[in-house]
Length: 260
Length: 260
Image 1 (cartoon, rainbow over the protein chains, first blue to last red):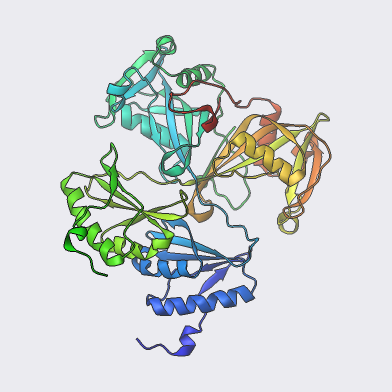
Image 2: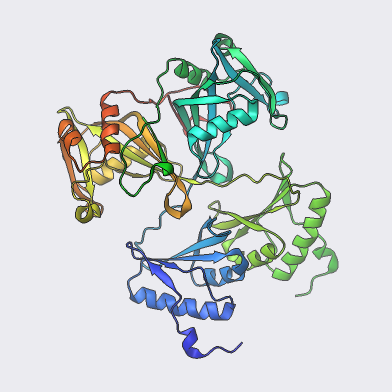
């Protein structure tokens, strides 16, 4: 491939934000030698322009460019899911530049579902049947990307037990720092009212799903203190409820939920 | 480099977990041709062994191997911070295999700090001074990696205003789906009691930091409804408090916090 000198001396297309961060447009030159040369030249220009941090997004189909960026001082930042998978890398051009962290929390929900006979919905997970029999928990699971807590808990309760529930509020939560992949997590316990009674446990995940009288649950020894405390709090009906409040104008109501 | 055939036919070192996931040991052959050959051979063996998902961790100093893994069907999963930065990639060997998602939430905290004169601590951020004057907020900021909410809010209030506070509980929170980097976020409002009175605003971030009488705050038009609602909830003293409860044995008390 023949490239004229002037093309190699062209700054890569980029957008500068108000923090003097420079986001390079992901349409990168696919030819490694060209990319290397142009990135090198661009960094010099950006440095002179007072840019603090360069953000570089490399799509997986151009992954041979990653090693070149690393050689020029770039650091892995996060995997982006916008328009297919890509790796976002950063390079500080000023030593005091602040690089905001990527997401570091995973979110789970559990449903404390009451029927009108003084009973609560409980499950034993299939993989607990052998090692922790009697470990009755509340149905629940992971919140999907961009899913609301109020929707996630209703969905998970239904998937695991076949019970339809109505979301009432957030009873409490646990914040935990030894999650999968070195992340932290939140596990939110939600108060729900059952809208149906017939249980149909998910055959893949659930060993037992059953209604238990709340007194039986609170006195069962194999139930952990955390779950008992959450049930007691749910019974006291002191939970955070979802509320409509005015946000700053740039946020639209489908994009958030508020509890207080 | 000369490599004997038998070395290329050696399965990469790996650990198999209970979900039939195979985590390849990050000590990979640095030579691209050797890595490519051994990865290809290993995938065949793992497929025969009934492995569902292969997890491959490539440290940034071996980033020339990333393109090889992509060519063999691997997908970017996340950037790991364990032992320096590395890229974790996945490859499904069974079509129904479930690959758990990486973290997708960032966490922030705000402090509703009361003194004993019926006043609340408020700030206007420096970058709001021009475009949104009178946008009095509560001091706060991002929770650090593996930091507790109760510690983060006390730290942020101090950094932004110089006020020492005592954490009392969680008043409410917002869950928002249009965060930076395509992530979602949680913003937790916390109830604090001031332990000092003299304000020393952070010169980099804060334009104004001042005590405001709660009635003045609630009747200031430029304060958004969200912050007014949170202040009212804080005044009602109905917040989730931190509690000691028994967890499953594998979790130690320094690793979590519980609110209910």
